[in-house]
Length: 440
Ligand code: URA
Image 1: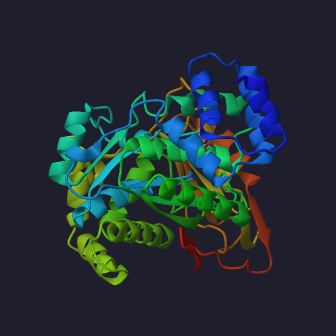
Image 2: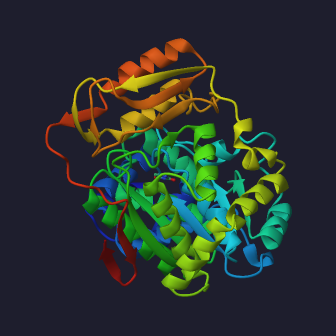
């Protein structure tokens, strides 16, 4: 086989065989195919797309390019959850211990922040002492005993994705539905869980800005998961506003603790309950109603909070921070961000909100840069709220005063005000399974 012919074939939209896809992926990972040819092939995929069969072969080959985690040492049905990313998306911090408190098993491998979106691993590491890298044996042991552990993805999970993603990043081929679907699902398949619940975010703070695209992405990912024999459910959630109130590492841990204590913002609470219920249903814990009842009990009796504290302790963290969140100290500087006019908040550019938090120090500007756990934003008024000129919309936190001034200026461009009330937004938009889509 020749890479030239593979590019030509895809360029004309012809369906590639399993062997041809393996030739491309394995050849690229082995440095036998140069970047310029792989880039041309990726661009051909970008324009021509892939059939479900091609996508299943591609994802399987990418997953098998590295370690395939064998979770058989963990007893019971293992259920994973993955979000396509967003701003203020701290769902895993609540859902993972909540599912475990209700009897589920969550062996979660998570990532760090990517661009304007935050990452679970960065958030967890803001708890003093907590480590997210550990031997697999210890990881399995904690999940068997507690029902939950969260570790960073090991270096050898889907290395093909790592190499291809870096090339996509510089060749304008990130925003391709089949390439995103295979990238995410290759890591999920390699991570070894039996069942997968996907959070496909949609809106101005998500990869998918339009609902039609998010539905397509969800359908493709469900087809890949089911094709690989893993029951997969995708939930479309709204990312046209930051999720909850907090954006930033310490701030999001605090909001997760608040939610595990039965408080927390309504949109975030709703999303956590929906995901926990889906995961429990896939685990065989009962009907939707029964799972919802388990969740309510785990929150009201604080067993989910206790589970989170136990997990933190097992992973070397100081559990006192979970029971006494006032131990988290505030950033040295803070500044109120106020409305410049009366009116409804008609729209928030959520990607810009995420980028503002990165400017404050909550995310990385280069792969090597450190993050500031205390930096971030607390949003009090979001899309749909009526506000008066001068009213506080958000508080910004940083370790340097100048960053606050720059970030406040930058954030202004993220708001559109109107005299008329904007249409209400739903936090949970649709549920997509192999049997079709259900809209809420
Ligand atoms: N997240 C991933 O892991 N891969 C993509 O392609 C996009 C988002």
